[in-house]
Length: 273
Image (cartoon, rainbow, N blue to C red; front, side, top):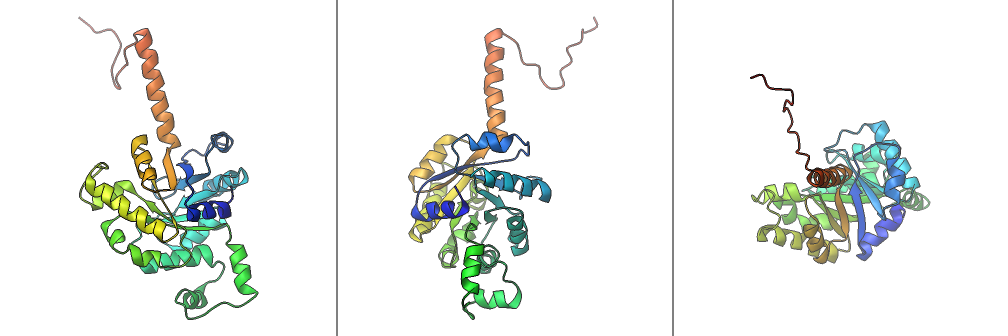
């Protein structure tokens, strides 16, 4: 899949599946490419990945047909351009609540390499690009996705205005931050949380953009939200998936052979009597 194909799938309402990748191990892209995923999500907001590592990851995953979607640390068009220059095919900006933030992200992802005052005029609708520049910019950015994190009550209240910005490809719900904003921390089964998810999904899909989430704490919530209409599904991270598999299998081995687990810091040297 390419970024252009991912964009089309999101807008058509097709479900697409990805996971968050933390590891920079060189064997990882080939392994993940064989799992049936459609794209990968790389988070530079919370994960310490430097620019060189990020570019290597993006180039490698893209070459294997997994469009890399990168979350930048803050809503900043310059950071968005930087990760696109490194090989990202989608950019997510966190905690978006204002129309001007979405316009800035649109400029970085859809109108590169236009910059400066002329870019501002185009974004404000005060200038329409003519040919051949308009076609050039469209082709230049054809694989780029513009995605915004919806993570607060304020964002939900502003959602109609945010969705009115042209060229938006998808909404990505941040369940943890949204639960905090709703004053129900990590209570993802709360009716208030369910209603918020329903509102975001319905509004986004009605506007013709993809809607999804990144969630690592249970498969049932993922199934429930997908049944509500979410189609941009980022399930867990390689970190949690490896940890959970090890916990499960090592616990089974210990239980099978009656080997008690040694607690961290426990001294198994003989005790003096």
